[in-house]
Image 1 (cartoon, rainbow, N blue to C red):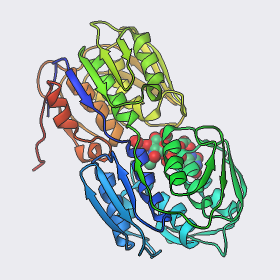
Image 2: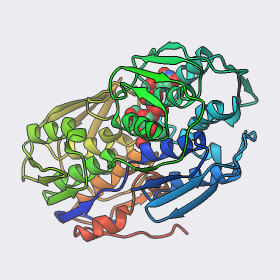
Image 3: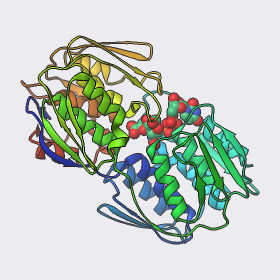
Image 4: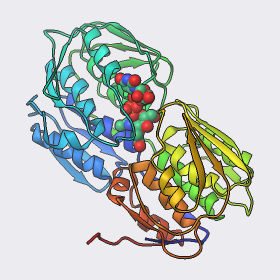
Length: 414
Ligand code: EPU
């Protein structure tokens, strides 16, 4: 429930990155002793992952922002159903279990279904390493006598495929080279953890990653990078409400594409060492935005950005070149009075005021877009349904917004 129209003011601390955490937790399976993850975000996706690991026999101690994972007694039991179905990133269990046990059965992943999200590049990588991959009644079964290093050229720079191949390749014989690898900061974070565990990975963050297989990995302690998508959402909310917010505990370089767009629109943005201050302005210029792979504008921020662009003068065009149809937030924004039409991969947005309405989050980032939109509406109460999807990726969103002065609260659906 949002009674908007109040500028957000103050500071907000950003938690660790969801898309790192849900790759680092399965990566811990590859170790023979305890892995400690610090700066863990408190999210429902993290809770589901800890459930998956416990089901496999790991000891998981989750205390606030720290998780201790002892995978000593873990086994590769088949997981065709159950918690793996709740999460898209359960596909990382394939690479991690294949690497450690040369065998895995994992139900096809769930998660945000904004459009078909194939995993053919993951499978191509596992096969190149010598695994046989079959689809048995909706569960992927992988096994290999031994994993051998190989050269894998990804047809698309997929974040998931890059990490998954890296996980399996750490325990393969010889060298694996991933070409056209994704370059997202979360990939560097996973490589950093694996290297601390004793893996030999070079080039993470570039388009060529080289992994020398090792026979054993050990436990270690690792602090997760800040969540650039949560940070970006607060930056957008600060601009949209004409507020003044210090977003703290971030790596400003990870947010350069968004910072550049906010400046182009006319917002004031100050980059400090580990924080970014956004000062909103009464008027914004229209801009065109193209969501691309990193270091381009992140697809995960394009939905909240759509809401901000309703506040700009004139017509903005926002295109997503990562996903062809990630626009489930648009019909809901239209219910709030937005003038937006979708043409192919683009949303064409004509600036204008929004009104309060009852709207429904179709996926995680669509939900964030509706919250940002609601915060701009000065009269009435915007009711966002389906907020459990927002819990998948935003740590303490409501308390954080309240601390910034927003009139936001949560009600249970009857
Ligand atoms: N793709 C393929 N084949 C594959 C894999 C991907 O064709 O085997 C295509 C996808 O259809 C898409 C593009 O490649 O068009 C990029 O997909 P990618 O594999 O990079 O996405 P992902 O790994 O499934 C992660 C994040 C997403 C984020 C994307 C892009 C996780 C668990 N998810 O997904 O995060 O949008 O990278 O940056 O890390 C979110 O946080 O809301 C979210 C959806």
